[in-house]
Length: 459
Image (cartoon, rainbow, N blue to C red):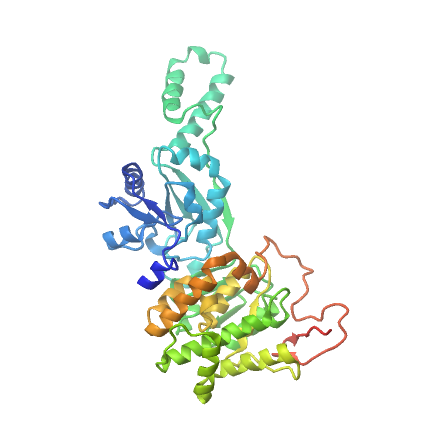
């Protein structure tokens, strides 16, 4: 992993903690949450305050996430909002943390100037030994305060001030006045500088979780569904959803995604350069095969990869040929290549439709199309790092160099080119299906898969 770290592709954007004051505040918060402390004088933390160095020191990578279902956090600075989330157990956790920090940035800035803020992403489930308990997670509540309880004291002081103002004989209540003075010494003037962290709640109808080998939960769709990546179906058979699908159920997954308008063909996606996207996916497939056969990929250009393709011949995977047929249709027209859900190239031809589930669906597609290493890195870093460890050195080198040169320089631009605009917060019921014919389009071509039509632009 050293290569990825050096290129900023792993542990990038972590926040450095090196001043004695911040280390001391972190230890107070860590003691408050977990009853532990670090002996390190400097370390790096993610958006939740988790440090890989401390995890290694304690021998516990889950020291802020016991049981993996109620993530605790430590905030030392609002700068943590741009950091990644390491050891992710739920796909919703980082976005919840980011929104919480941004919504309370002024208060957190004031609070972290003198103390660490510690808290928890809490739900009503405390352990997830069976899959049914995962489906009981529907809402996450963010609870936070400083280790010195400044927020709680500020609430109490506000209540005392209200009591003082409302009671006629409050001026003669020495106990009340003494209590107010004592609280004010800790909180400051809450009438001029309110100190508050509101209890924030986030609905989580759809999410991915690492538990049980990887599980994708969809509940805001017309039909609810669970897609699992485990080898054994037994733990998931009686889940209270409309459809339960295994990774191997390509046709069932494809139909679920289509019936719920969750995907669209890349060749039809608005604003997408379909030819460039398909060509790059084919390059990644070539790299995988070439690396497996021991080919030298150092400094390989697209021309070099084409030469490799000629040399490999029959060793090229069926998915490569399927994308090649689709690329020829995009560039030269002709007969539409029928690529059904049983074809190895099928999921490589799709991307998520716009909407609140976009990132989750693209994450699922990345797991179903692991040869597309760019989408895998962008949408499912946990899986990317796991697979990367098993690649040949030639493939590791090529992929790391590519991501550094082609993705790191313009992350937002790359994401927009591949996946479209950022998802909105709500979907409307009158959104047309991506498989429907656009209005005013008269010409029809063959079906893509068993679910609907794809049209090609004509001059």
